[in-house]
Length: 121
Image (cartoon, rainbow, N blue to C red; front, side):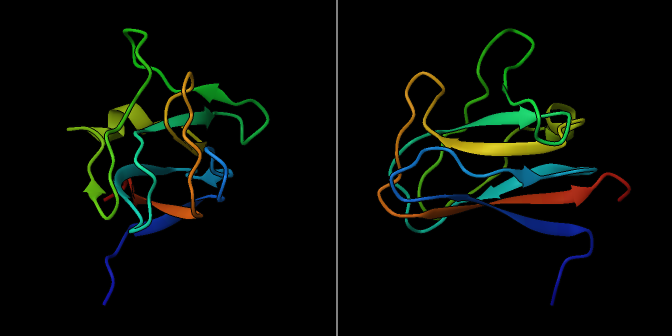
């Protein structure tokens, strides 16, 4: 059984690291985050690239606050009440364990699944 229009996009953070590799969202919109069972306690923050991975920027809201998601092992998280607004136009994303100012290295490798859907649905 599968869900039409729903895609899992793995963002892998290697053991001893705090930042995942690039994860392409393209025209898809982030609607949920599935946390792994193995997670060293830390919030999530993000680096984004509107140009396909050439330029990376920290993700902030319009008030100048770093977008931070409280996360714990084994959780499924809906990042915002209206995630399509925040994530629209973001081509690629990297997931960070911790914040830009205080990254938290993961003890074990962790795969954070970014759950996306098509805006056409």
